Length: 311
Image (tube, rainbow, N blue to C red):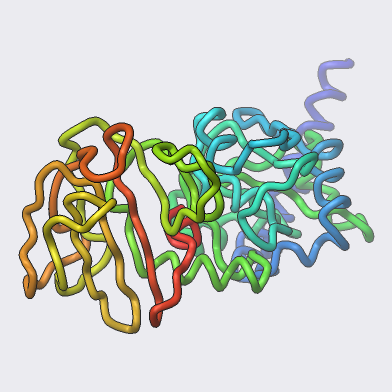
């Protein structure tokens, strides 16, 4: 008797679900997704609270890391096995990439980006927007019968999703950060390595006094290949004072880069290079205490912080 009742209930649910699908559930994927994902929340505090207390995934975990003195976002990303893009994709309210003491950083356990939908049928559209397979999108844990009744909830919350290996979209960023993100797309990193010294005032490793550091130091093993950060024309190569063996490239549009402390130089003045073209190898020539690349960036003669483009 009870078995018949259970079977009847199950069949009723399946029937209702089938009618629900035939009524257009699959077509919901064509509806517009809110492009500015921050629009679901009033402020960063509300956003963090929502993720911390209202969202859980089956295969992805979210950590909430408090910035300590001396931390930066790249260090936090590296310590947690993800990249800076993942942190940008998870922290929708960031205005810039300057870590502040006691700031809370959302850190996913895998590389990818967080998104939100207001209708389950939008997952397919989300996959198209990010050019990923739908299986690479994980929806937050929801009540078992949620697909059957969620449309009847007048004040339902957005549903969080995690898009694995996807890059963040500029439309989901604050205007200030989006501008920097677009600028970043103009360049590529000259090599992979540990960021050992940043743009700005620092204690000089040789003279042991506070001096302005006009670039970014990337530590890497002696002999590591160095590539051009963007298409351009080599304007100088050879010994360049404290930079040791160095190359300078004019990229047009007012941009110019310098690559210092090389052990070997492969580029010649007047040579046209493509982004990624090998121009030399890491060394420790000039005023240097160990093998690394010193990378300086100018725009219309004004120094820029390389961290604005090398994420």
